[in-house]
Image 1 (cartoon, rainbow, N blue to C red):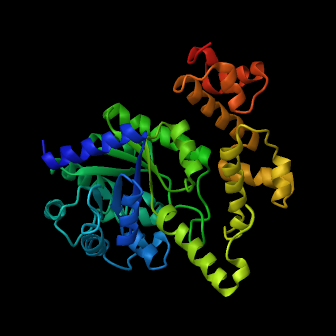
Image 2 (cartoon, rainbow, N blue to C red; image 1 turned 90 degrees about the vertical axis):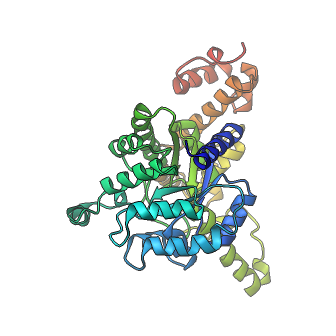
Length: 394
């Protein structure tokens, strides 16, 4: 077995055991790479969309013929990422359908230069319709990306495979993918983010199908998610608790959305000293585009106050919205209603308290906002499939 490959995989699995998950950052610049590593992230992905984000464009630019993807990634990753990062693996976003390269020689060159692995990006899996059909007629297909992963695995590189459905996941697992990543599309949020994305509930269901198919072929495969509606720590936590995923890769959430907000707010602060610091929770939502900030506000409030009584009408009043509108907005973007989301969140917290931290049952009920133990027990069984006493101390 390739020693570098073995060392890198052992590193990732050790980080996963210690932290409970893997965190990857799709970095388009040296400064993103430097501080992602300093913050304890576990791996970096060098993707062409990362460089386009640094240029002020949306991630979608990485799928259009504005530049040669492999040349762009090689240029910035060699100059900005490899010299900057000391400990964590760097994964090369490889366009395996590029007709201007000898794929097998290029993969060997990637390994010689010090990259730890490859990822199929940009991926045909993001495309559909007549354009997808025309590409496949020319041999520019997802099957070519599978072959890319297969040969990279043979060469002793970590392989991170983006998959969009269960069939693709099974194919990538059979090709030897070490990490299967359920790709939910472009990330929402901020000014340049996607406006139409899956709900969290639909994303969860998609991830479960993808993971199940991959595990049937390769049980040890690492399961992570990327993009779409997952744009906050609370969203990632929802996926960890509900889909069985073991990690998250983010690009826009780390280097576009925070930069958009920081530059906007700092410029406003210098233009008008009174705007130097937001004063309320709602002030911090003003920069969100299209009203999506209200849903994030509700989720963040639940994450911080789930042990207390939470009423949607009170949150709506704070947001200066009608309860009906806020409820409809939340359901549309999350995929389930406010009450179901709140109960599900509390029950997952309770399960962790009971099964992992061994908190007494009555105490666990109180810690997630239930004073009536009978009601708590009923909800726990409904959402976890068993009574609280099945996994905790009586």
